[in-house]
Length: 439
Image 1 (cartoon, rainbow, N blue to C red):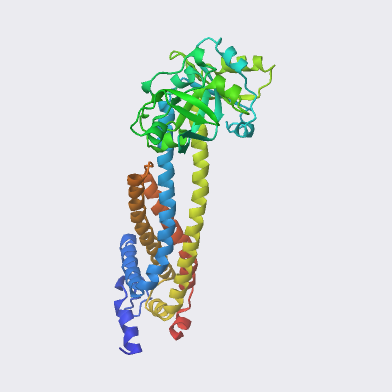
Image 2: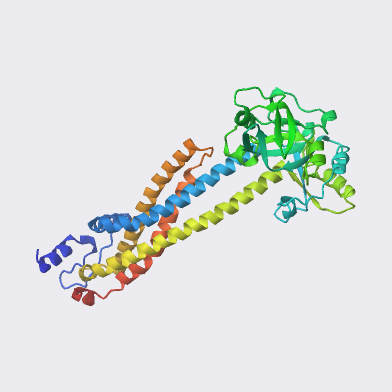
């Protein structure tokens, strides 16, 4: 086909409602089609333009696809984590209170001192809290890090030194044996978690056997059953399925550096823990000479802290994914600028036969948005597949709901528009005469 014939083809293939019509020496006039019809025409034109260079289009869309997989998958995973942690914290009961060393900060988070072993809590605080009206159970908690050994087997686990009340406050019931009694506080006894029992003993009996923690022998008097929802992300984060309880008196007397790291208490079911914070804080201030070197966390406050931390993680991960989408958007802009240069002569012809600046601008904006949306749609498909795989092979259940999909596609549209504006403006501003001369 000759160049002249190609130009005539472009002219006759251009939509008639955009062409300049003249008759009876009247002034040129334009007939404007309906907005939806114009959008369809631009979309069809964009489809043909993109499929003519499908390899380049595919490579350009891949950046958006990767960015969409990252941002949608991360948001779905974090939504799943928040939902599961919320369910597990609620399952602990609304009447539980945790006292930590150090004053809570403005965000309700514990002091860094409580994380590095510096504690202002004492066993006298535990005794005093037992006198607060409405408090049913009080338990000192000493956190013992390290491993649990039985024979030649060794596993990592969270060991807590506490009293009988501390074990009872765990909603997981006993599967075997009993809790340790008050008169056994100074003896070396333990209640083993279901996970530790399986890893250390398998199908053999565990009661009466001795395990070694921090170089000391502890006699197993009870085994907890498998927690409800065991194997879920919430239990994994809270450690409910991975706890070994030791007699707290023996821990604080015989384990080097052991102290009261936390105090757990449970109010009567008629008494809301949130309503009793004032009484609990008042008793603690009395014990600490008016100093507020402690923090009181209820189930509601604890859930808010966890959700706040997960929200921060979601924002940080969203920022990283957003950067990848920005890079992909720059790629779209570069390709569209190249496309404008390659189609300069076509743009000149279309302007000559009546296309307005707004028509050219809309055409290239639509092309950029289609590139971004198709890449985003492919990314959503891969994200759904990835979330499904994660849900089947791990303890995490990502939540890919309509809000995540809508946010993802909206982001793609915004990226297409923002990074398509510069090429579209350049195309719209081309002088038709100069464009026609372009080789």
